[in-house]
Amino acid sequence: MSAQGHKLLVVGLRTTFGHLQTNHKLRLPAWIPVIGFAPKRTYYLDSNYSSQGQTQVHQGRAELISPNVGLTQRNLSAMASSLMGQCRPLSRYDFLDLGAVEENTRKVLASRSLRHFIVDPDLARVVAGHLERDLADGKAVIFEYNPGPGILTRALLNSGAQRVVALEGDKAFLPDLKALERNLDGQLEVVHCDFFKLDPMGHGTMKPPSMYSEKLFKDLGISQVPWTADVPVKVVGIFPQRNERKMLWKLIFALFERTSIFRYGRVELLMFMSEKQYMKLVAPPGDVKKYKPLGVLWQLACEIELLHKEPFSSFVTSVKRSGTQKTKQVQKDDLCLVRLTPHQRFFTSSLTPGNGASLIVMVKQCLTKKKSRLIDQLNTWSPENGEKILAELGLLEDIQTGQVFPEEYKILFENLHKSKDFIQRWLYDHTMVSTMATGVL
Figure 1 (cartoon, rainbow, N blue to C red):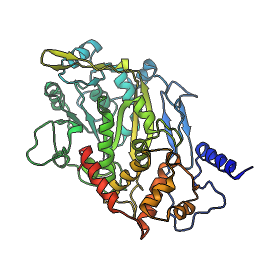
Figure 2 (cartoon, rainbow, N blue to C red):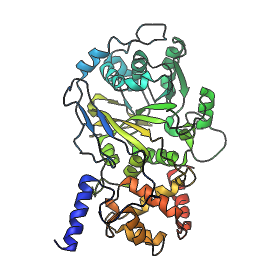
Figure 3 (spheres, rainbow, N blue to C red):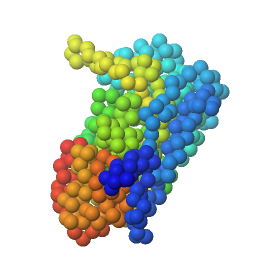
Figure 4 (cartoon, rainbow, N blue to C red):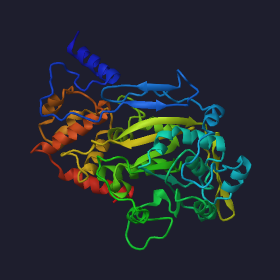
């Protein structure tokens, strides 16, 4: 086989099997840090799919995901019937009424903002069932983003949630939520706040639903914990479909820099997002269309688990009113309930909150052109050392940036920062521009 043919074969094997060391002649020296958080990805599906409904994919390093794995439609009746007997341990009542679909729909359609709601009690029970392990963890506070009339709120409480904080941005829903709060023994706290309007740019007086996370956490009595401690807060909700990508960018910057909610520890997200966005988050190297910086960064920082896929028709979309005009957003994607859990060992002596944003910019810079050679990028940061760095990592000299795994980008970044020849100024300049553009300070 020719030398060129051998290289093509090795690149193909990398994409298929995901081995970090593809060239058997090149060995990692002892000083190269070993990724200690390479996770397994587990898909939790509906319990009525006994043999096929729960699939576990174990891979030693990178997480290669088939677009069709785990995307199974729900069966409400089977899941809902199994949850009917669950009760809250601390409430004054045995079971909270989730209401009827028709009445719940009437309430959410009165909303003046464009949002998606859970109005079906069966669907609320299904979602609560998928969060069973989260609700059983009494140490973590559950933040529910924009609960609206509180159908899912009641289902979470019925399923054993010991402390739920309802962050509602629409004043119209506050009276009913406050009434529910008064009837419980401290299990529910209602705050006029929009989770995605926490920590906006600028300073000064802040009016609800915008709020500083420092005030929110202080008022709730939630203190900072070390990054390696247990998860202190779990956020449950539905990403706003109009700008879910923007919100994911804002959150990933906050995570890498340990600002906003991540100042307080490894806050976990349990959110519905569009199937299209989910597939981009978990796309593997070599997927030219879907393998993008945002997905690389989330794969690098978090364990990503698909819990459930729900047809979009199961949700009710309110209508945004602008004067006398009414507009409705058309949505075709199904929604995926996804758990994003930050890795305990994400930060190291080389990757810190102080330079985390620089890693984001490096990844974005590399994946601007996915078919460009990685060695050319390395030589711009550390002149004449690109070949040496690739050899130390066991990477082919002609490897393309779109073929590099997320954890390999982290190792490259850490090793570049150890290099005396590393040119950092351009990276930090780009970091400031990019940070300001995303609205995260």
